Image (cartoon, rainbow, N blue to C red; front, side, top):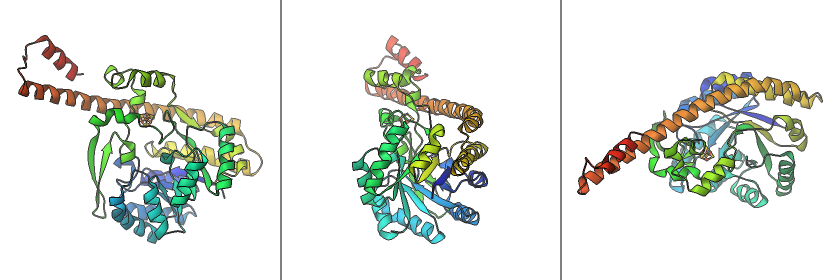
Length: 362
Ligand code: SF4
């Protein structure tokens, strides 16, 4: 049966999404998912949201979709054991070895290969299926009905379900397929998060695969100190690229007819009322489609103002992330300047020193 899966970045968001008609909600345990800690839930709250979802006949999925090293499997399994006992309905995962470990212990639990797996061909489907995934999130690099229909046919041959992000960020090479943030690796920040079960985990801010938020440098090429970190050919590529919204609203009825397993809304970082509005709009369209009365025009009219609000939130967040990145760049320059002064015959009154000081102030 088709499932509408909504984000649960906070308890309030879980509550609102369920009230708005989500069939299932996904949450991230502190330190283990591809979001900032503010949009993940502590251990004890995951039990509360499982009960909340089940009380309303809905499902609760847990995102363990940051990179998980083999050395962390013991710690991961302690959490997974608890979630399985509490009746969690599925895990959204990225790392094949981690999937294998969970699947070996709980073969009956649904495993979603996260969008971070960047699945867009048969080989990738076979790889995640072999690791234990029962469905995969299609890469956001695929954005036409024809390409997604082809992908679904292949998935049917492989024997794995297809989950579509119907409302998401795009990322220039598909969410999970981008490594542009690596140009900014010197500015990543470690953050230790403490969970209510006594465990701790380190996130790497700047690197979404390591559980941190991306600084979104791809959207900061108008800032000289960011642009200069990219090679010229990457900058040219970025100028022609699109990292705006990825929304499949118009074709939702066709995707339902194709038989996709899940339609997913992304956005744990947005305000809960906004996620409730998105969930309501897609819920209505799905129900209308099932009743043979899809009104895509009305759905689009309802969606446009919500998208405008979402864009406003996203732009404000992007600006904050760029300010955070610029602060790290300035700090780094300052540190290098001090080191140079301490280790060489550096003349603090020289023209070069004046220019470096100006640069480090941004
Ligand atoms: S926000 Fe930009 S830099 Fe970050 S992962 Fe997406 S495309 Fe890459």
